[in-house]
Image (cartoon, rainbow, N blue to C red; front, side):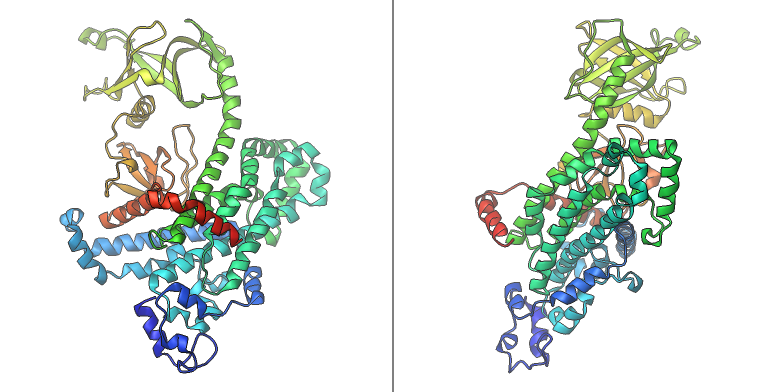
Length: 588
């Protein structure tokens, strides 16, 4: 593989067998490609690899949390070091590309950043880096491969070993909880079905998937590829995840009801959770494993994709795997939303009374984006009006993805509808600072309302963040303070998630540890409207859940990596796509 390979030809032994370069002409010739390097290296013994898998000490929940925390810390160190090396120079954001290239060779964080994409090196966890495996250490392969190839090997190795950790945890859900004889007697078959769904199918797919990954590892200690296997399973077998995850709404509800209504269930679950096998983890953390894994698997493929050579066959395979996983994850999300949205729309419809011509609320293509109370300004904006006590009166808005319904709340938890408009015919405008009385006030225009005419409402929110959130939801195409990912500018304010956050409202975004997000809007009272880089999902979240990435070089690198992950097919790649997929299937 180039300069790194020259060291091996000067060494006194070949990888792992003690022969000299004279006895092994292949070494003396110094391999210049990965293919040549692969031909020189022996397969990893099957027993050795299986022992490594069996000795994995962490459950997937522990592995996932520690891995993401390590990723956050690595970014912090890199951000601080690069920020320090810039000496606080404000010109760093506008540094020409040529000057940046001159600085990079002297920059040490590139090597230190390796742990963010590889396994935990804690000896107590029995996890190892790929490069720490005895077979790798004794083979001399680290002297052959370029540093970037080593990072790629670590990324592929992490995908395999994390799948083993996930399989271990999933197996515990089945053997320790689902198949517990006492639990079977407590639960009605319908309750057990909702609680565990098709987990046996998920477990079977994970077992076959892991077995194929193991076989690939056994072919050679230098992993040739894993994304072809991921692609095959995502395209042909991962539909079991969609079935499981789509049941999540009913699963959560059933679990809560069982805890409240069946003391025997509550006591037994608490007892089972205390077993040392569970490592102090709750039963609920095992139930959500499949959804966590399918989303994490997509991120692991992204890590691989960032490290493969551009325009190579491995890049094409990784892109294919990523796209298939993206479709599975989207289908999972849609499955969850569909279940909850249908019930929500039925509930809203029952609460509405129409003062105007009735509008059908329930539709398969409609869902709620935001609802809540605002203050409507009554009367013209004059000094006399401002002195009256009834300057504002309460109204209640239901905003759907295609429709706005304006109501007044009436006794009996009902809402009287007095106006409506298509969401595409809404316009918003923020008022300039008008003093305390008109603080957090904005103008809402209905270009065509329920009476087929234009209507204007002056609305007051309870806070600046609530005003911004309503304006963003009512007019999604309105320009935000900062640009979005799709603008493809190479710098934008960014944050990384350091505390997980679960969305409380439909316009909020659930955050996972280590998520990176572009800031599109922020408020003075601590809220951010952001766009997550790995899936372009948008939503609001508390700024306290995140910390800002200060260095422009890191922000730019994050964006460049995402552009690569989500880049469109070029003509040459499209022509070769079918051929590559056929080759991937032949390797199965």
